[in-house]
Image 1 (spheres, rainbow, N blue to C red):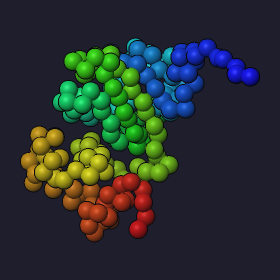
Image 2: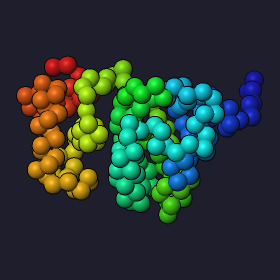
Image 3: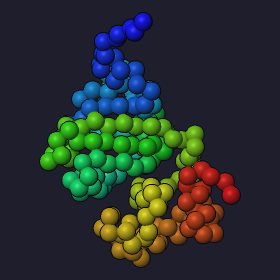
Length: 186
């Protein structure tokens, strides 16, 4: 005997095990319980709020937006791991993925998911906003040259930030730094 169930997409969205939201122009229109809980907000507190409240600084919010646009224009979707900020100020690593509903409007209506990866990757050092950005790009496997191009910095400036990160994480090599950033002990 086959039992048929009506698919209730609103209930699925609301109870999904991963943080999800619908946004328009980087403003959260609606989000699920997993997202509000992950960031330490109450039910409905994030609706109508800019994604900016989820970032450690305004500068990181703006730079991430600038980095997302060309990728969304090319692929129609975006994914990365970055350091985000909970309502109580705690910083944590988060895997973020999104897709524009209209490929011609990358920051227009879209669906975004957020997964807390802090258990695998704890934030263990005090980092500047730029160091957090460089760290996130290093974790993606990008070279200093590519990071420089993506961020509008010179390769030398990226190398300077990488050297500071290596000191802060007591890493002897770039490979060791990436392992420490992702929480893998060697």
